[in-house]
Length: 624
Image (cartoon, rainbow, N blue to C red):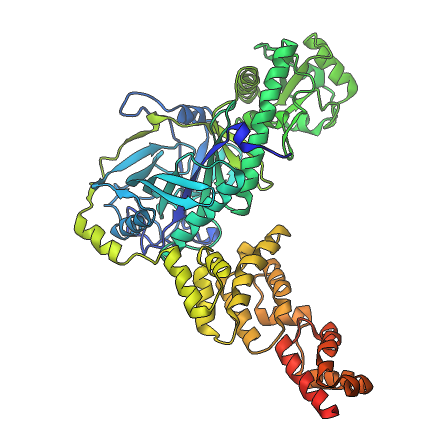
């Protein structure tokens, strides 16, 4: 679907969460390393509840989470302490983390605060043992320039990372404490982004600025993007947990499409005169002799409601792989209940006769939709009430909510959008004064700007304006410098195109290039400089390593079949030249060009073209 974002009125903003590579955590002396979950040495349980802020209000998102009545299990290690357990007050703000946050703020042309005060942000989904996340505002009012215009950066906060979720065991959610407390910066842009493509480019540019400090963690999970999206007739929606930059544009587009289709659904439901009846019926007797394994697993307990005028609506696709019925199921699943509806039945072992009895119970017509859940009453009723609220909302407005990013670029409901009531002061952590002398010192050590780097690359490596600009703004610029400083005979243009165009092409093929480590590239270019293979094989080698990153470059070359004996190469070229002696004598030295094409058909990717050309020239001279 082609979208006119200007006409639709798209507004988007990003929140970038980047772990800092500090020696210790934000409020204690524990190391910032992740552990093998099997190494956990102890565990404990917690139950969290929603509490009032200093304004006497309870945040709506916290209230929603409290309804689920979950148990949280935390796994600790010999590298975690009582602060992570919430059994000891936090220490002072990590000054190394403050320093890095100020450096990032200055790179983004922001205004640092005179004093950094720590706040508590209520979060009771279990990701923090204490029921809140500690966060501190460091700077405001900055921005970056993009091809599509200026994008403001409203805030930069220093905060502790959350515990990582391991698994769900029935009503309990299991978390690991190794990640809890790792310092990270949260960069929030203004809603100045106007297209899906611009959103991706802004994320890439912010990521590059963060990496230019050399003081942030690298690898999967160390940087996460949240995207705030709204359209003119829709609502602001926050999509959390985007880890793949490639997906940002797709996620923005899919959310715009979802809201446009929800607007169409609202108008269709209004035209039909649809309504939602609050009566929840016990339907267990209908399924007393059912063949449905889903219902049998729930002990035969089934409850349901009727959505008048909703026939066909749950089957309406909103995003790839996601229908309106998926939206309703998101709400039911929060209470541990699976959802089914008559638009998709008979299915799941439910018979035609059972479906007819369902409809009969509610006097449902062909225009209506019956929704059921198989669960005990204490689960089923809150699940169905949540489904009813979502169905009622579909007739009124696009809901403001927080959603989680899915691997296919779609998203699923998480909770309502949080409000101002979630924040209140942290009295256990003293404020940190930011004086001019400290800022002056940090400014004197800032990394170079894009423009300076571009000019340096043009002068030092002989790059043209386009390539110098491309690599200076690319997150792999530091890797480019390492390669060029290590292997002087490698053409700079080849390295630039590999780290930009080649990787982009592999991403379009859905190759997981994020699994490639810097060492893969360094080893590959080392072997290329030693003429172990031809530059034409670079994409194939990277593709192979992305699929099997645990293997070495040498092994990749061997597996692909690029390993060659140079004596055999010389014999091959000599044989081709000897078979074309008449042609060589007729054309003289000009025979090298045509014969080069013949030889490359045999050796492309196995031997560098310059090496082949040199040998070919020698063999042609011998004949002449």
